[in-house]
Length: 283
Image (cartoon, rainbow, N blue to C red; front, side):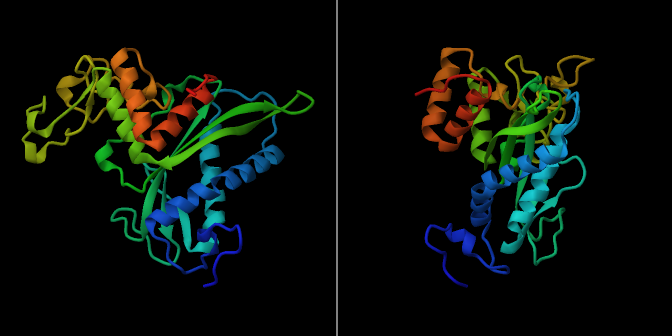
């Protein structure tokens, strides 16, 4: 294997068949992401020009799919690729070794997983959630959040979807930020040792489930005894992509500041949210 050229990313000099570690693959995907997004936007502008771009068009799912395909193409010379995870699981993709068999059930052949989210800047954010429990997230797993909008063509008669900003970083620090702010706002997490449903600790499936400040479950998988009402199964406020970094009191604001100082990834995400919402970030 030859070394990197002057000014070249060392990971970019890898030849096909030279094994990436999970950490190296994660770093490489984040490094090539800007070029991949540029390629996607060029493709969209040439292909998806239409009249009457609307909310609820399903375009966000298409953008997520395009990211998977284009990122996989960017990785193919490095012996890794993006695999799609079937069914309605938390993660959308797995980064897998192109030379190995892959079993999504046992995770044999994969390096880590990626959750993809899109947010239309002109729509309600309520559908975008990052609510997976921290205990289920691998240290190398990534969270991809793409904001997009309908952009007019030069003549103003047509429009096309355009990816505006992208956040792509390791997911676990974001889960830790989310959980710390959830508690600072008065929320809590179920302990297997004291489950509201009275589960035996050794078999409790509710350990780590979030409860809001009123003690009601935030996820469908939370304790049945803590559902908000007979008609409402769960509160569904936990992990809103923008809402989860909101603060409404001195304690929450102090915790947000502490988390940003302690974690560069948390700091980067809050700045991303503020910029996406048209707000000035802190100096």
